[in-house]
Image (cartoon, rainbow, N blue to C red):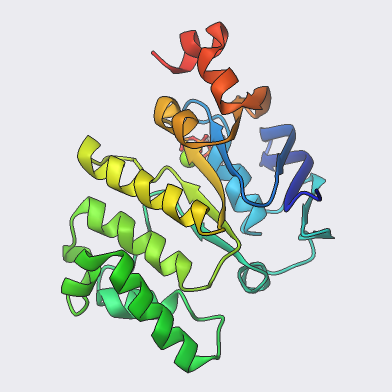
Length: 236
Ligand SMILES: Nc1ncnc2c1ncn2[C@@H]1O[C@H](COP(=O)(O)OP(=O)(O)OP(=O)(O)O)[C@@H](O)[C@H]1O
Ligand SMILES: [Mg+2]
């Protein structure tokens, strides 16, 4: 099977500081792949490269057989990659509904967009109840749901999630992860960045452990959970 996403030997610098060193990651269609690692390991940087928000100095990113490096961020969205950024980044002074509509900015099929809006409200009933409310007045969990729903409005084949559990109560985190599994079962491929390594490895098929810009372990999620070195460093 051809990979949906292949990241080859990616190197990223912020000025003189090297944030990624030859990072290589593959995501097969239908998988949930997780990227775990401590603060500053380079997880967010990796996702921002895929979305074309950062230019790597070396390496390549192949999506569906074609390099993304010459594409603009909006072209990447149109190709089927949606990014739920760290810290959600919803537009707090716009309504829930307007945030969702913005997620469909790359699309011109208005009737289908309306249908997809209704679909999000079925998937996230709390957002339906609050559709006219300013997004900034939502709880943290509701904002995370809005950020995911907004990403789904572009009809992604590949969903990039950056720390969806951050700052949320365990019961809400469970809801969010249930939604991630459901989306995956419906055919959406997922690249999940998490500091909550336990939960991420329980959810994913495969995982990569990033440390100071390098992949130090990779394998089936079940294997990583049982690996003594991973346990010791990341699973408390
Ligand atoms: N805009 C920037 N300018 C300079 N250095 C940066 C910038 N963004 C990230 N870095 C540095 O690059 C490295 C990787 O950061 P990154 O945000 O990718 O890590 P992360 O794994 O997502 O961490 P966290 O778990 O805290 O979100 C860190 O050392 C960070 O300080
Ligand atoms: Mg990060």
